[in-house]
Amino acid sequence: MVTSVYTISIVAGMMSTLKAAEILGICRQRVHVLCVQGRIPAKQVGRNWVVLRAEVKPIRKRRDATLK
Image 1 (cartoon, one colour):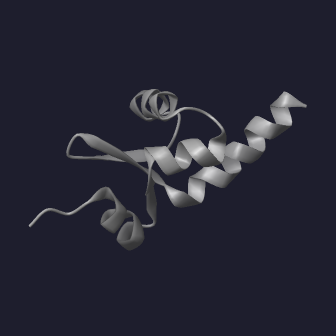
Image 2: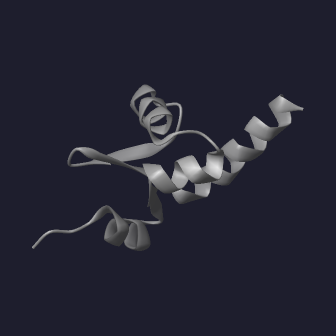
């Protein structure tokens, strides 16, 4: 049985790097790099990264504040 990242996100309060990228206004590849660097709280599931859902909005708020 194959479990998709989307199933994991519902169960564990996580989201895909693509969804996080849409919310943060950056590309998916940049989210991946930030996950690898530990700058975005995330977990690696197999070869994919999933981002902690609760952490994305505070990151967006900090990013928006620095752009003003």
